[in-house]
Image (cartoon, rainbow over all chains, first blue to last red; front, side, top):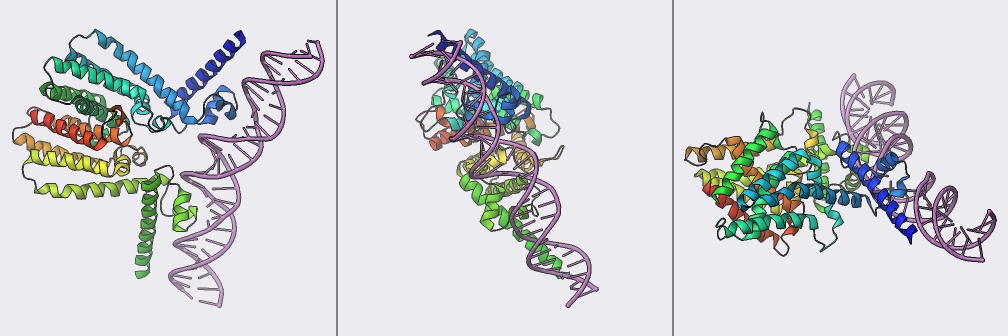
Length: 203
Length: 203
DNA sequence: TGGTTTTATGAACACTGTTCATTTTATTTG
DNA sequence: CAAATAAAATGAACAGTGTTCATAAAACCA
């Protein structure tokens, strides 16, 4: 039935419209200012309509969180070209940090905010996080095959390595870099990253 | 005038009552459930009264954030006993991580949430953060005097080292440890910490 | 005791997420 | 094409939020 197809298409268009508008407001004014009414106003529909397309507010943010991961994955794609696993690891870390620096609010939504995680009901896995983490674990595994990170348990090692990057990004995103009083944030992040790579190199 | 003293005392008692009650609700039901009305109900005052003792809601959370730092500092106090700076660094890291694990919500309030940071008006320093960071920088400086961390810029090094710890704590606090599917969270944090120390040792 | 200052109140304002009876629009049937 | 049915959109209503402020109560001073 062609009508059903169109209806499905219209439904997806409406969801897109809501998501795009929500993202726009979110990136401009933050999570709290992105209210159902603000979204509804902007797309010229009533608030109730939004609930015909998303079960609750954080469903919208979960969807945006998923799309933000899509953006990160597309940045990671060229990494497949890098043969040497440790070189790939270093490039991946740089891409990860640059992503956080250039997309502060998206990074926050993906790795810090509670909103999207509240949508994962009990025992339900965080697919996007898993995918990033698996990529890291695989790379580390290949590093290990080449003689690096000897006798290290991969999960814990990956967790530690991820934490190093996330820590810098999270401190940046949540405005705690002021402890380095005069320092320029970007320069500080870059210098810290070189030290970070230094530690991985010696591990 | 003795009456003024009493009034001042009563004022402080009221502030204490509000803070203690806010902390109680916060630790039990989280930030969002800690509303002015919930606090007012519990202490049997009207909502408006709270605004006679705190300018706004996040003023209360800024005060709680400060007191949480007090708790961390008191845990750090025994570190002064540890002569060897690198040993002190390791002990400090362990205390920091244990604090986060045992006081998830307080750690969140101190190092992740936006609420208390919003109270630091433009150009106003984050004293509590500064104090922790300075402690770290000093310890690293002493490590350097003993020949460790050669040719490393202290601020950036401290930032990187702090980030490693904060990353693990933040991933834990914000429920992103599920990527290590079966793993026990506490065990994982401990193993990652030993690897982390390993990296510092080789730096 | 009377007047003044301090403290407390709770209604009101402008928001929030969410629900649901009602109305409008679209599709199918007679 | 018109009537009946199904789908979609509405916006008022509910229970909540932070915050303000005119009013009322209490405490203090003369």
